[in-house]
Each structure stands twice: as structure tokens, then as C-alpha cells.
Length: 339
Image (cartoon, rainbow, N blue to C red; front, side, top):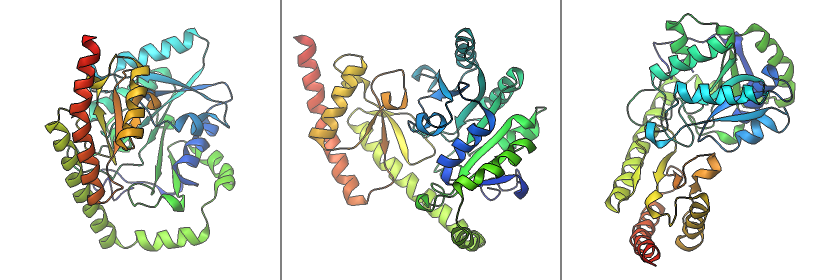
């Protein structure tokens, strides 16, 4: 964690609580902070499995903070206040705000001003802030990643309210080893998390292997640099060829995916039309993309595209299929609207 944020922030090993991947870490921190029936604000669009991870066993609810394309899906203070007040009016007890930085599915990292705004918000409301930073080193272009750990060094805030979730599944490509952590500035949370960690232990063998690997500074540095190099190359291949057929995407800088805008291919601006388009893409075009509604996006027509887990030959086939499909879809839409 310190290597990713080199020169800007240091971490205390005594504040780390291990867990079975980021999934286990997110559930663990929710168990520590909230009771059954409490709720967390989560900016949308958000990772669909949060509904499972944060709520299935804890009984905690998710209250979406709706972000839209007019602000390039950035989290605004107005959206936070609106979601918070609506929850309070419905007698929902908000215990905290959970964010992903960089974002899945948007593929963007949060800027310093936004992070400071979030810290001010949770400080004023006296609620917790959980930052899922599992894509912290999976960056491929500017702006650089800014951790919440860096931001709170510059602010006067209650650090007992700040918690970080991290894992090695994305940055080091090790999802199957199930290594996640909660890093909390709150002593009571660290103590509680340690007691709960018996239900999601990381094996001694796994810890020994990772300690050896992560101690090799030269390897880790080269690995992260090579990943970034390959990601930016693949990202530009996808987005440039999408632009050539009239498909725009949210400008991204992180993650293994990008946020694709197909609103102009919808027959109507509805989620029913989005699902119809998605089924066509999956069943007829034979491309596996995810509809925005599955991420609780409030605007139909957005899709997440994962671009990092396929070889170059498959990439070329996928792009040729989308290039053939888009003109046909535009013609069909024009004909439907005329009728």
C-alpha cells in the first residue's frame, strides 16, 4: 500500500486486519460499523456485488447516491445531501458512506477536491467513510491515484471515521488467493475486526508466499509498470476504434474496464430498451458486456466493457463484431422511429 502511494503517505502495520479478499473485508467492516437495519450511502453506478457483500448477512441496506452523465458521473455534494435527507425522512439510519476509488464500473479515479468534499460531508454528519481502493495501482494514465489516506493528512477531521479496504486481487492479479485487508484509523474497529477475522482467515502458507513476493521490490515495480503499459495500450485500441463507429466512452484512467455510451442505439430511452439492446449484443453479436442497470445506473444506455482479460486476437474479433453491429443497429433504429 505504501509503495503505491510512495512518498505521500505511510501505513501502520498494526492497523491492518486481514480478510478473505476484498469481499470479506467489505463485509467485515460493515459488521464492525453498523447494525441490522442500518444503511450505507453508496454512489451509483456501483459494483453490483455490493448488494450481496454489504447486506446479505449483515442486514444493512444500501442507499444509492445517484450520479449522472451531466457531471461525468462525479459524486456531488448535492447528490449526497439529497440521498441522505431522503433516507432520514424514511427513518433510515445512515451509518456511513462507501466509495470505490478508482471506480468499478466507471474506470475513473476521484480527484482531491471530491475526496475532501466527502470527508467534510461525513465529518459534518458524524458518519463513517469506507474507501474501497482495490484498484489503487491499476492506473494507466493521468490523473494519478489519490488515496483517502493522503487527503486526511491535509485536513482537520475525525480519523476514527475513516477506513480503507484493499486487496491484491486487481493490482497484483491474485484474485484466487483471497487476500484482503481492512485498514482502519479507529482502534475499536481494529480490535473488533481482529476478533472477527477468524471467520475469514488467510492461510499461513499464502501469507508466507506473498511476504516473499512483495519483499522483492524490483519485481513488484516492474510488474506494476508493465501492467500499466499494457492497460493503456489496450484501452486506446478499444476506445479509438469505438470512436470510429460513433461510440463514445467516459474518459477513464484506471481499472480493467471502461464505461461505454450506447444511448444513441436505444429504440427508446428506457431500461426495457437497454435490456433489449443488451440481449442483442450478447445473443446475436456474441459480445459479453454488462448493462448499466445492473450497476444501478439511473440513465439507460450505458454499458461496462472489460478489456483487460482477453488476448489480442480476441480483441480484434470483438472490435470487428461491434464495428459491424453499430451501423446495422443505427439503420434499424431509424426505420423503427419512422414507422
